[in-house]
Length: 166
Image 1: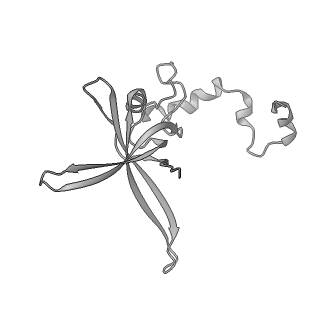
Image 2 (image 1 turned 180 degrees about the vertical axis):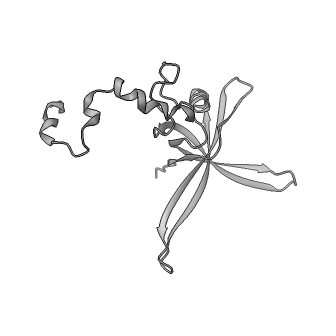
Image 3 (image 1 turned 45 degrees about the horizontal axis):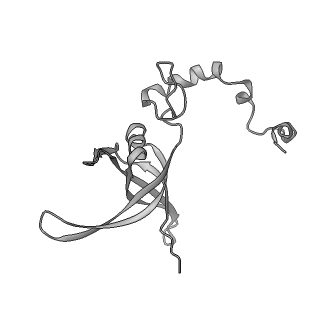
């Protein structure tokens, strides 16, 4: 019988990535990602939150990209598989840890300037610009964006006929 070991995580980094290099020269980047579930407590009727922390490891080129562009607070989509490892702590007790080995990653959100021009006028390469640059971007955006960005959210569906490729 076939089996599947696949994990999909969408969450926010709790700290900056940590990158190290193996003796072979390959990069390894580790991150911790928080996912939060919101639910209504049946007893009190109040909204509750439960946060889960996930350890994720990137390898090779993906590790270099994650280490370069991800920062604390970044929202990220990660696909990978679960890996359980056994280790001995400093007291000599054997323990197990389950981590996610990432196969692919997508940076999400624009809170930190992802995908836009940086303050020096160059492209950010799809990464995150520093948080300080976020307030400066909206002032420059109208000059570089076409007028449709100013349309109201509810648009006329008849305008969309020209955009359909079939």
